[in-house]
Image 1 (cartoon, rainbow over the protein chains, first blue to last red):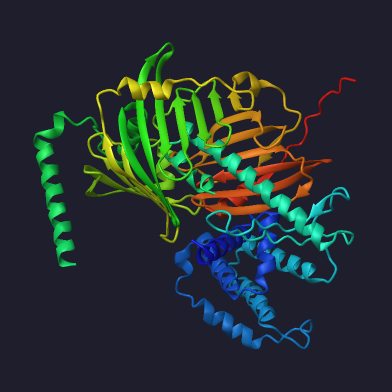
Image 2 (tube, chains in turn orange, red):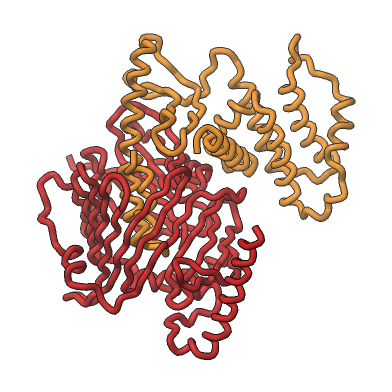
Length: 228
Length: 347
């Protein structure tokens, strides 16, 4: 375990979320995580394009399109496309990449066989992304009371077998909260979450030992918790 | 290398020999009449519950390796047959699980034991032979092997989607009991391994062992007792929720409202299984006022914690299970308040 595998887990999770986003099944949380990472993560963008491709192919009788060289078609169109006005001095790879996705959709539209659902989903992603990028904009839904603290949360590494990544929430912090208070609150939350996971892992073991096919396994699995 | 290979091949030949021999002679002594992979799984499930056995197994997960001992039997009680089982951790902090029919006690040294009681148990037959199971797992028999000095039938259980892990199972050829299990993710990485090192099937357990399992410790005042009565489940809920997404193939196995282990509230505990994998969803009113989300891979278990809001109250959702983390997350985030049925206020 350790850094490498937690990194892998994180990657895998992102991909799951991305895939859900592509299927139009992503939740708010997932959507946000994907959006937060899409900017800085080349691998994820690559995956996004692949997923899009796969999604289209699956939904539209894969065999019909197998002969088309997708990448060539996209590249061709990219060449013709001028960098749009919104890109100022730093035309980053990100922008080009989001264009690729948009263009990719357009490519399908031109072929007259567009996967409507998929491209709409992705347009939504891109739209929200821009919305998010606006300075000072809070995407997070309206908050509860003043006492409520919104903060991305991370279970500190080293506690369990693998460390977690934060859920990628845009934090809404009240200016009155100092970083010390925040750290303290996180510490409390970390402990609360650990205790919760431990307690529910036990309950889950009990439930699944009663109802799943591998009777002794659920309790053996608790070993990870109890050795801490 | 050469000698290793030689041994391996010799082992194979031996296994093949065993196999052909037992076809002729051994058939009468075989307790398992399993033929198809589905029947083998069914036999596994039945053997686990019905046989008397005693042994040790190792459980490996990441860098952790633990040895556990297990004793299991069945006895005739007042209300029909009941299972008796004891699992003991052999390493580190002493921990023990005892099952007596509908009651399970889990004890860790230094903590108050947790006791679970079930009112009724669901029957567990035919779950693998149904068409549904085949839709989500492909079953492939593999070569014979030897585990814990016993002949084992190898079975590959390959998931057909991304919402469950795959398994490689070794089942005792004579009884169907699971001798070894390797859980793998979609990229073939091993997530956990369980393997018997020794195993025996005594005719019956000596009284000393039986009384250890049966000795009923009186319930102490501090003890966490989770009692699941059908009565409790009939009580009207002041709050309700629904899950928007459950991966295909998972069906509801148990649903109960119990006392929360982490607060003074009650918690809804719902368990789903596809026959092999299972996960649980816990929903309870949130008291902490710290709205934090957490996702964590703890060994083979995915754990996701999330808060949702219904009107002016907050609720905490916890999903734990042996499913990919992304799947657990999707389940957790899909949980939302159900439109409150207009309860005629009695004022």
